[in-house]
Amino acid sequence: MGYYITRQARMDASHIVEITNEKDVINGDMLQPEYKGEGDLWIDPQAAVETAILIRNLWQRDRKDVNITMAVGNATEYHPMDAHGLRVWAAVQVDLMPRCVWCGGIIYTDAIRMWTGTKTGVVNTFCSMGCALEYLDDMTTPAIDKVAAAVDEAINGFYDETGEDDETE
Ligand SMILES: [Zn+2]
Image (cartoon, rainbow, N blue to C red; front, side):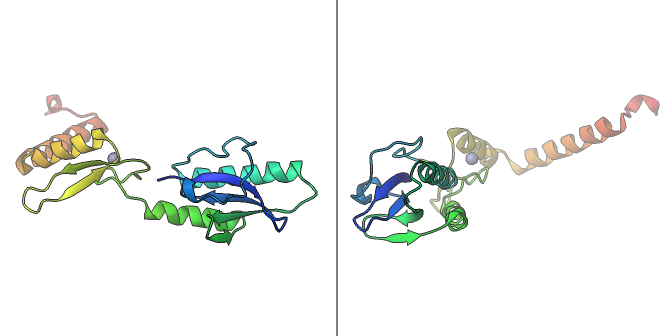
């Protein structure tokens, strides 16, 4: 999963910077990459959009004779958008992305999948092996140990804040 940015000069003379989410359906009118980030695979849709806007501005600077627009689309679909529209679109893409069960972070690339269900056979997804291991550690720590650790932390935190200790009593 990812996004590609291409520049296109179409038969109808329109000039478009397009964001496509699958390389094999990019419109055949694409031009050779000239600007940084063009043709690269972008896993973060928001970074892809900001780069597309930059490419559009640079291309427009170099081609003052044509009006360069932007769009999200592929060979069969085409949705013209201005910078604001593209940023809203990218935010929606981010909302649709899977999240790590442990840290809540976005899973941009392949998730770590781990069977963690003791009864129901749940497969959870994690952004990294570190998160999967922390989740596993937490899951296997008995509840009583967690309470003891929390009490410990609260007491230590109290003395850290007040600077008091037992010797004053
Ligand atoms: Zn995570």
